[in-house]
Amino acid sequence: MDIRIREGTPADAEVCGRICYNAFKIISEAHGFAPDFPAPEVAIDVLMRMLANPKFYSVVAEIDGQIVGSNFLDERNAIAGVGPITVDPTVQNRAIGRRLMDAVHERATQKKFAGVRLIQAGFHTRSLSLYAKLGYDVREHLACMQGNALGISIEDHAVRPATETDINNCNGLCQQVHGHHRGGELKDSIAQGSATVVERDGRITGYATVVGFFGHAVGETNKDLKALIGAAKEFAGPGFLLPTRNGELFRWCLNNGLRVTQPMTLMSKGLYNEPAGAFLPSILF
Ligand SMILES: CC(C)(COP(=O)(O)OP(=O)(O)OC[C@H]1O[C@@H](n2cnc3c(N)ncnc32)[C@H](O)[C@@H]1OP(=O)(O)O)[C@@H](O)C(=O)NCCC(=O)NCCS
Image (cartoon, rainbow, N blue to C red; front, side):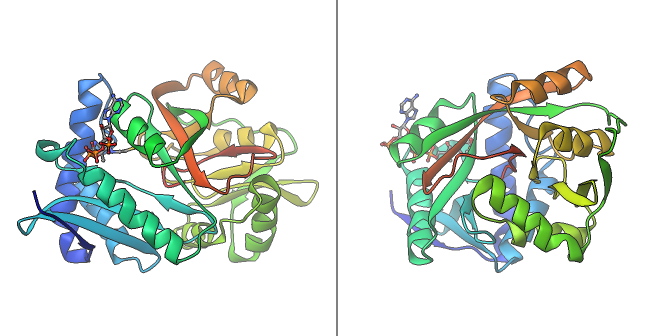
């Protein structure tokens, strides 16, 4: 089987999006979970945006000129994010995934990223094994949380939309919690109008690019994250990702009626700083 790996282009979005939708749907439903993408069009749209964004490196795998899979490297931040990686279900488990991972790792080395991260579907034995073999370590067990908007405010923790002028303060906070900032993603989310900040005593003590699957949040304390989660009008996508080691925040979400939709795992290779504060990772990170 001759597998060819090449860079992706926006013209690949339709085929890659359909493969991505099918691959996730089949593996999720086989384990009794809802698919990550509700319809093929959603997967096509997400991949189209990544394929068209110069800050994402994309690769596709082909057999006899037919696309059979794709993978991405989010290059917006100091630590690169891997995924979504998907391989056509009819040709899985034949080393195509490994080749697609090798391709983004080569790129990360070339671009001198200190580390790479990804989030894995916790029930998927194959991806867990593949990533571990490729050198990834498990860092956090996550619960994907979904439910009705909470409409809860936390005393003295005011939440408002983030603006460009907040970027430096938010980056400082992220630096404090993760050892590096994620200003690229934050800037994009401010432009899209989804980012929020928490202010306490006139200072920014937390922010979220979006409280949802594709967003991350950091806070000095759990109260900052509660304020952001409590103020969110919805939890975009399948839900937001909560590190279950943070038992206090996890129980607060459960006690407020949120439900766990699926277990996930944060894995990393290369530089990883143990977070020094409260955080919600994004699926891309
Ligand atoms: C995950 C995915 C991208 C992997 O691609 P793939 O082409 O099927 O995988 P590969 O054949 O390259 O690699 C699988 C590896 O895991 C190993 N493996 C599979 N199941 C295993 C198990 N239960 N225990 C131990 N090892 C296992 C295989 O032996 C292989 O290892 P090798 O490379 O050393 O031979 C693909 O299966 C897929 O699209 N799945 C659905 C979508 C998905 O879950 N994407 C990942 C999101 S986190």
